Amino acid sequence: MKTVLIAAALILSAATAHAADTCASKAIDKNGKPLAGAALTSSMNKCQKDAAAACDMSAKDKNGKALAGAAKTAYTKKCVSDAVGG
Image 1: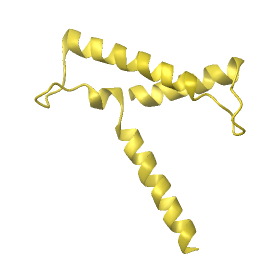
Image 2 (image 1 turned 30 degrees about the horizontal axis):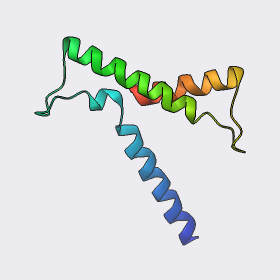
Image 3 (image 1 turned 90 degrees about the vertical axis):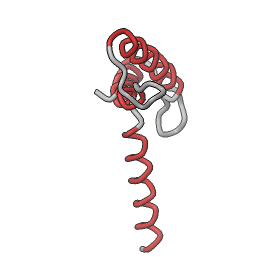
Image 4 (image 1 turned 90 degrees about the horizontal axis):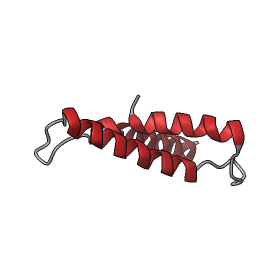
């Protein structure tokens, strides 16, 4: 029972850390200030393209087989939305 609780805590902490790592949270300059205007747009577009590529590569079912068709589209859409932060 103790092992299950520890595993659940680790999974939740990993999910929380991943949720905070979005494109919107990465859009800051070298001084830690939020980007604005063209810099923000450029950063968000690049981050969204990178997220889409990563999501396409990770679109697999529970058996490790690549998803196709509507399942892949739905997975990629949700994955990119989660990565962008919206």
